[in-house]
Image (cartoon, rainbow over all chains, first blue to last red):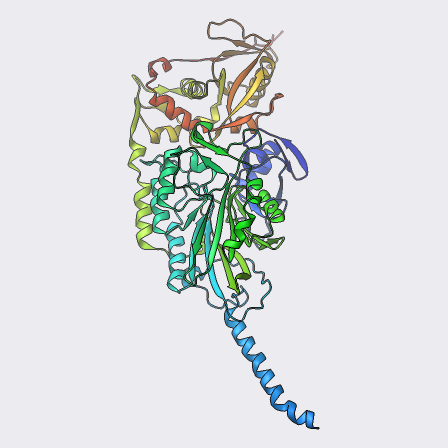
Amino acid sequence: MQIKVNGQTIEIFAGARVGDVLRKFSRNEWTLVRKKEKKVTDRYGHEVGLDGELNGGEELIIEACAPAEPCS
Amino acid sequence: MKRALSSGPVLRLLLFALLGVFVLQSCASLPTSETTGSPAPAEASATTRSVLKTESTATTGSRIVIFHSNDVHGKIDNFAKVAAIIDAERKSGADVFFFSAGDNFTGDPVIDRYDPPGEPMVELLDRLHLDLLSPGNHEFDYGIEAVRKLSARFRTISANIYPQPGVLPELRPYAVLTAKSGIKLVVFGLIQTEPGSGLPSTHPDKVTGLRFSEPLAKALELKKLRADGQVFIGLTHIGHDQDLLLAKKMPELDLIIGGHSHTRVETQEIVNGVLIAQAGSDGQFLGRVDLLVKDGRVVEKKSRLIDLSKVKDEDETIKAMIVKFHQNPAMARIIARAPLEITGKNALGCLMTDAVRQVHGLDIAFQNNGGIRLSRLPQTITLHDVYTLDPFGNQIVQIDMTAAEIRSLIKNASEKRYEIDLQVSGISYIVREDAGQQIKEIKLLLPDESPLPEDRTYKVGISSYIASSYQFAHKDPGRSLQTTTADDLILYLQSGVNLGIYRNIQRAFWKKGAAPSRN
C-alpha cells in the first residue's frame, strides 16, 4: 500500500502501522517521534499513535512539538 | 399617545419573557469549556481542549453524556481513573453511557496471555458498566470464542459482520438504548475490512464462521434507523479517514465515535453536521461527548478528550484489581522444556526463524540479531522468557522474493556492521568478503547444501522491523500475516518440537577475505 509522509509517497507492506511507515520514511524521524521530540499527525492535524493502523492512501505529517506544548 | 401608554406593560412583559428565556436557556445549554467553572472532581486537572457550540435554541432539554474509549490494546493502568470519572458523572444524576469503539485486546502480553486471554480487560470493562461495544479487528486475535464471551457479557454491535448460525449469537447490527429521560439512542457498529481480502486485519483463521461486508456501503443501508430514536450514532472501528467519509455520506448521523487509526481528535470536528470523536490509543485518553436533546433532536453537541495523565482521582477497588492483574501467574507457566539451555544468537535465531517458517508454512524466514534480546533460553521455558527474548511485538510480514532479492536483503543487513546480522530458517548462507573487506559473494544453500534455485520466488517471512528498516530490492511490497514473532514462537514451543536440535546450530556464515599483502 502507499502512504504519504510529509508529501513523499512510501510504498510499504499491507497492514503496516504508523511506526513502520515512519521507519521506512526516515529512521531519524522515527527516533525523534519515539523520543517525543516530534509528533505525527494525519492530514487533518490530529495526532496519531505509532501503533495506529492505516489504510492505503492515507497521509501522515511529522512535525516538531511546540515548546509550550510538548509532545505527550 | 394611546399606543405609547398601552405599550408600557406589553414591553415589560416582553422583556420579562426574554429574560426568562435567557435564564432557562443558560440552564439547559451544555457548559462550554470557557464556562465550565468547576468540572467534576475527578476531571479537575484534566485537559479541556475544544468546544463548539452548535445551534442553541433550546429552553429545556435532556443532557446525555457519552464516555468512550478505543484501541486500549490491553493497557489497563488508567482504568482506575476512568472509573472515578465515570462514577462521578453518574452520581451527578446525568444520563451517562460508556461505549467502546473496539480493540480492547492485544498489545500487552500480561493481558493477552491471561487465562483466559484478555480476562482482565473484560473484568474491568464490566466494573465500569460498559454499555456498548463495537468490536475491532483485534478483538478477534484471541479467536471467536473470546468474542463470543465478550458479546455474552456486553451489548455488542456490528452491522457488517454476518455470523453463521450459532456463531456469535448475541451480536446485533445495532442497539437502541433508552436514557433515564426516555430519549432513545440508536447506535450501529461497523468494523474495518481490508480492500484485498475483505476481512478485518487479524489472522484469517480467527474469523472462521464470519462473513464481512464493506463498512461504508453497509452503513448507508441503515439510514432508516434515524427514525427509531432521537439520537443517531455510528460506533465504528474503521479509522478516522473512513469516519470522515461516513459523515459526508450520512448527514442523518448526529455523532460518530471511532477507533482503529489511534487518532486523537482533540479539536472538535464536525463534518456535514456530524460530530466525529476518537480518543487516541492505549488508554491514555478518555473521550467525552455531551449532547443536549430537545423536541426529539440533538440541538447541541460537543466533544473533548480527557488526558488521563493529568487526572488524580482513582477508584481504589479498580486500582487493586489492576495490581493483581499485573501479577499474571500465566507468565510463569512452563511452555516447553529443552534438553539443554539454548544459547547464543545463532541458536536462538534459528529457533525463532524456524517458528515463523513452520507456523506460516513459509519457505524461508529471517530474524535480525538486534531483535534477539536474551543470550540464553533456560531448559524450562516460560511465557515470560519468550517475551524477554522477543519483547518488541513486531508483526510477521510475508514478501515473495527471488534469490537475487534475498541476496539484496542479506547484503544490506551484512553491511550494517560487517558481520552476520540475519539468522535464517529454510536455507543457509555464506557471505564472502574480498581482501578489501567488500562483500564479494553471497551463496544461498538449501538444507542439503545444494544451491538455492535462482529461477523461482520464495515465500519469505521477516519481521515488520526488518521490512521497514532494511533497504533491499523487492518487487512484492508484502503483507502482514497478523501475528507477532513472539506469538509464533509460543505456538512452536508448545507444539512439542525437539529442542535438542538447537545445540551448536548455525546457518549463517561469514568468510573473511585474505589479508591484503604487505609487500
